[in-house]
Image (cartoon, rainbow, N blue to C red):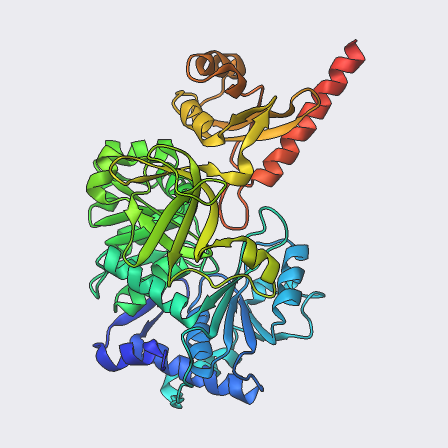
Length: 508
């Protein structure tokens, strides 16, 4: 089958801006995007890239990322976006594991690759050399190869929150079905305009936002690097009607000095995903009269469920119901369906789901049961069929034999007016094995915040769920995908616990 959909889009679409890059002062139509990809496909072939070879890009949000995706589809190469926020050890593991043949890169990030990928470094996407190769005015049409639906189209590596990143495989079926599910769910059409702030190496920004919008013939304004204040300026200038971001990005947008509620007057859809919702952000939008819609997915299954605008008013904590052509179940440890209201592991099935992890048959087998992908998220379903994510299975805290769900504690803690943001996690305890702690960003300085929060929580949750230690941070540290960096926070917590224990020993 011919999966070269950017050519079809170019054949059918009127000449209009498809991608706008305000920083570079450029804009490209669908016809020009197709021409750029055709030209780059010829270049890849000249470099010896063959069907099934992995080609990578290491760059911030840029049209070159689309160039390489579409050129890969045309040639049958495997597209690999590399997360430039990863640590050196993680980048090295991605390059070694993927066996990438060549890497396009942005000059600003070249230093992160030197010494790690010297033999596969290929070209700076911001160079005049690259611009000359893809220049649509010198269009050389390329006949796309035929591919099968189960052929490998792309690799996207996880953020490595529980170890080194794993390569999530996207077949042509899964790469194409997710955008189709998304544009059907949100009724995306050619009148849609968005600002792309989420990194394009992330499924939320790429699979759930960029690809559906372009597939439908909409327009994307690229924000090369996210900044809340700059985003507000772009919203004022381009007046998008559709936005998808990670909750922490909405937070940065709201607290920026130049934010004004009327910036949102043209937006029909405000969608959050990629990590757990922030109650303070949801409340702020509700106070302004806007619904922040929650979508749920993961790298292995980019879009699974969505809470509709109307339902989100009644059930703001829900992730809603499955999108079209996706099945979900909530399973107990024997892989049987749980009863309504009971907690189990969320499992999903659909053509948008990954076929597995690259070169990891054992890990792949472990995350599938009867054709369903086991997400690792604990969830429950209510009597209406709406799903609620309770927590990550691996993040369940077991303290003194009692189970504590961090999300339950976070929800309660976030109700205190002193708390702007919070993350609840475990730390090592010689007495209980694990104990509950919380990292907090305060709305204002208060020397007695710990006592106040402790007193507040005693009225909200059972005693064993109350944080035994608090860590005040000026801002929440984020990992490479803009989620709270729980591994780093846990290191901080364990260090604080050891220091306090040592001080007690010295006093004794």
